[in-house]
Length: 638
Image (cartoon, rainbow, N blue to C red; front, side, top):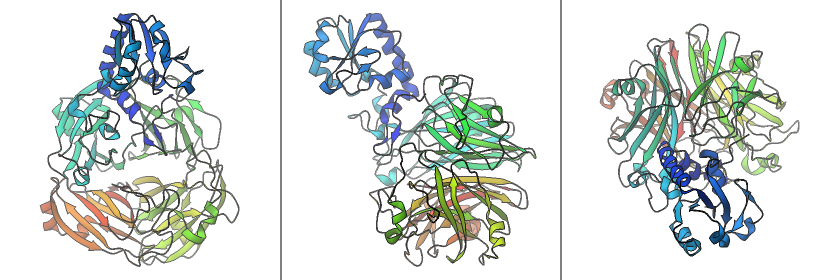
C-alpha cells in the first residue's frame, strides 16, 4: 500500500508538504512536539487544510490521546480523519482537551480565527513548531514555498576500490538568486544512521558543485561506506529542482559509470528495470526517502505486464539504503525481460547496478511510471499539424567503436500496448532506415541491435554515427498517451565495457503546441531553445557528447549552437560554435573542440553549457578512458 501523502502531481508539480515533514532536521522537532502533546494529556486536532492524514503517515499519532478532530469546511463534514468522525470546529469548546494542535504551517491566521473557541488554560500549537531555521529559508513568509525545499537525494559510496562523485553547478545565480546559494548536507549510512551533517557555500556564482566520496571520507574520518546523501540548496531562485550527474569511478579501468539525478519526488511506480544476462547480477538500490520505515512487503517488483508481484520481506529503516538483488525475487528472469517496481511513494527514483562476471559494472536509473494517464484519442491525428509529434531520440554511437541496442519500455499504466516504429538517421540528418515494432503488448520485451538491423536493411551511416527516433506508428492500431520511453545500451567494442541510459519522448521544434509540449524549462511551451549542462571528466578521462537535433516538423536547416566552457569557479574560459543539421546529430569530444592550452586554463572540475536560441537539442554525455572503458547517460538542462 502506498503512503497516503501526495509527493507529486503533473497538474500541481512537487508537493512541499511532504518535503517539509520529511526533512532530516524535522525529525527531532517532531519528537519534541509530540512529547509536549503527550505531556498535555488529551489532544484535539484542528485540520483546516486536510494535512492531518499526511502528518500521520510520517509521524504517527497513535500514542496520543486524541479526543476529536475538527474541520473548518462544512463540505468536509462526514469524513473520517485519524479514525475519528470529524466535527465542526465550532464544537471545540466541548473537546475537553488540554492542548489543540492545528495541523498546518504558517498557521498564525488560522489560530487567530479559533482563539475565542479555545478554553482558558488550553495550549494552542501548530506545525510551525517543526519549521526549519529562518536562515535555511529562501522565502520565510511562506513556509511551503517550493523554493524553501530545493532538495534531492544522492547516492554516495566509497570503498572496495570504488568511488562516487556528484557533479552539478550553481545555475540559480543565473536565474536571479539574490546571493550565491549555500548547500546543507546530511549523509546517512546504509542503515539510516547519520554519518555527517554540514553546510557550505558554493564558492562563487556559477561555480561547480562537486561532492566526491574520497574527500568526504577523509574530511569526516570515515571507513568504507554506502550512503544516501540528502542535499538541500539554500537561497535558490525560480528552479526548486536539484539536478546533477552521478559518476562512479574506480582504482582500475573496470569501474567507470555514470547516471542521472534521483528525481526528488517518490513515486508509486517505476519501470525500465532490466533483467540480467546469464553472466550478470542486477542490484537495485532503494533509498528510503522518509523518516519512517518501509514496512516489510510494502515494496516489490514484477515482470512488466504480469500481476505476479514479489515483495521485499525485510523492513527498511528510515533514510536507509537497501540493495535488492533482482535474482532474490525473480531468479528465472533474463534480458531482455524488464521489470516494474511497486514503490509505494517510499523512495526517489532508484539506481540499479549491473555487475558482470568479468569484473566490470555499470550504473543507471529506472524512470517514473505514470499512473495518471489515459490513452489520448487525439494523438493519432496530430500528424497533420505536428508531423512525427512525440519523438524519443537516442544516439547511434560511432559504429566503429560501439555497438548500439534499443529496447522500448512501457512507462505508464495506460500502456497496454505500444504501437511504435524506429526511424534511423545519419548524422547529416538523412533518413537511412525504418523499423516497425508493430503493436507491442505490455508484456513484450523486445531489444533491437541497431547496428545489426541497419546491416540487415543494407543501410549505411555515411558519417559513421547518427541517431534513432522512436515514434508512434498506428498502422496496426493501438493507442498512445504521449509517454514514450526506451532503454538504450552501448558496448565499447575494444573492451566490452557497457553503459546504458533511458529517457522519454517529447514533441520537438515546432511552434505549434499540444498540451505542455514542446516542453520548456523556463516558461510556457513551446520550448524552442537549449541550455544543457555538460560535466567534464578529469584527466586521463576525455569527455564526449552526442547532441541530437530532433524535429517533429521541419525546423531551421541548421542549429546555431554555442559551446561555452567554464572553469570550476564559474568563470568563462572560451566559447565556440557548432552547427547540426535538422534531424541530424553530432558526436564530439572535449579534446577535439578545445585545444590543450584552453583545456589547461579550464582545469579540473570545469563544465560546458550548450546553448542554442534557435532550436531544442537533446543530448547524451559521458567520459571515455581510451579503449578500456567509458560511461554514458542523458544530459540535463535548466
